[in-house]
Image (cartoon, rainbow, N blue to C red; front, top):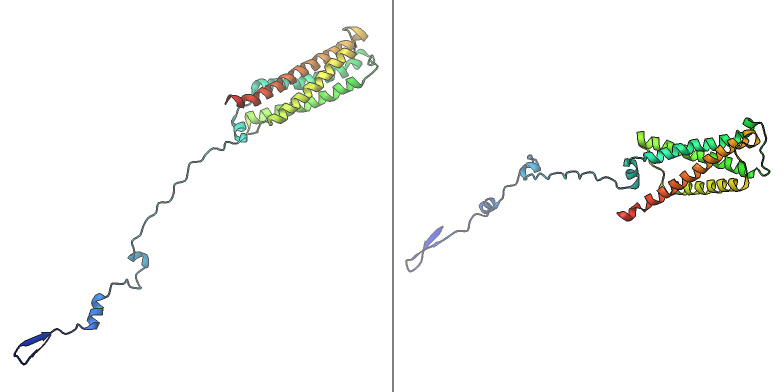
Length: 215
């Protein structure tokens, strides 16, 4: 503060301006030193890591088929088809060696046709037995329903043609031709059982595919 006297004898005081250096120092804000880490001067925020979402089971058909237990009645039918095909082929082929007589029919194409489809049935039924065992005691998957239905319908049709044409074409009463007809008719019985079991399997597949209508 500076004071001086005026002509009237009055004393006037004038305030001096503040020192600019001191004003700058008073307005300075504290800045963290360069030696101090930046994260130490700032407030740390802990962000929790997201918890893993629970695993959702895959609703794919493969998982459903692997978890579904295989059907024992279908397995028994496949076992029967396997041995019935062997029986049909074995008895009709072994009729001549057993009786010592040649085939008494003029046209043999139908017999050979029956031999071929018997071997197709042996391969198909043995494959289904293998599928059942891998599903029952392992982690195998079942045969796709479309493929199984198609094969069963085709084999049912093939055996149906064979059985009914043999009955209509080959007349062979029991005891004739020194026992040849006994073997042939036994093989015909196995062929008939194959036709019926493949019909059952095909219808089973169809009704199983229609189960989605009940959901």
